[in-house]
Image (cartoon, rainbow, N blue to C red; front, side):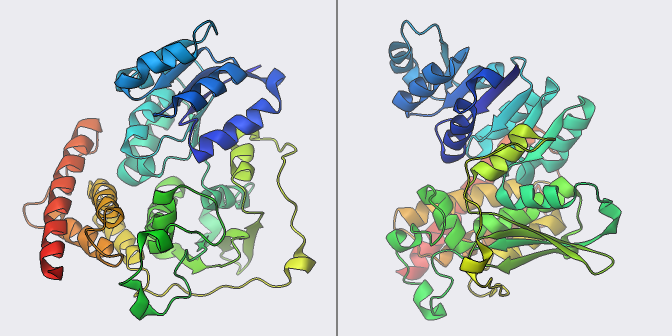
Length: 393
């Protein structure tokens, strides 16, 4: 029986992971499930999976979680230290689906035990890719990608020599505004940006899809995970979201991965790797689909993509600056303080300050320097947001 833990169990990736594990309960011994403030769901998952421990990242949610699991035999804990302690519990396979920078430390702790880490936390690779991958090598651990695009690349490379890869193409739906006239984007509302044409996701990731900041992060992830040079990584807008990625080889061949837009495919592949198992996902009817559309991304519509290539060129703490500034800019857009197009401008200003003569861009990467970079970039972002608000007045 495989021992598994699910970090970020109450989010969309976590819920899909729970769904797959619950379908075959005799195959898994669930060590830990963690979540945020959705205590009712976290307790329900812990009971259903008979987890050893349930952890909420919020200290003030400890008592509600304890009450919800009273008499279940499931241990409870709360806080950042408790998350890391749970990640150190022996497990064979760990889902890393905590959103944001908070997912890095538990992921590193899990790798230090030698576990297989199914990585759905974008921030880990964007801010600390070299640290994460080196930790895995040092402890004989494995990192498996769970983003649909990176899972697709990973699957296309099975049995292939990475030296034969000429380019990697990751696809993007284009988000809510892919067909809007450019002159409308400045007036785009939060409600409009929060509706995705293909995927059912949370508000923040849906807005990141509309701005293509999510794809900017995935470009950086591709470099860090696969060791692909930035000039060999391409993005294509693919409105149908059925081709998740393509790998081009030096003989001119392109190998594409197709599948329904259902995250249980990528999760299930990581859960069962190196084998394949039956999964409850739709099978594509290509005759019914009829045609697949691709187009180059418009840099004026998606300025976030150019920022990804700047970050890869700079290296060091540039990824941490990008993540922190992006999150602050997104908060400001959701709060109505800045417009849709101003998010990329805020992030660009922060990266400029980080890469200036006195910027901390080249500092070494560890948890302490990343925390300081996150704080500094957030401060710079708030200043940039304030300037943007003044410029609008």
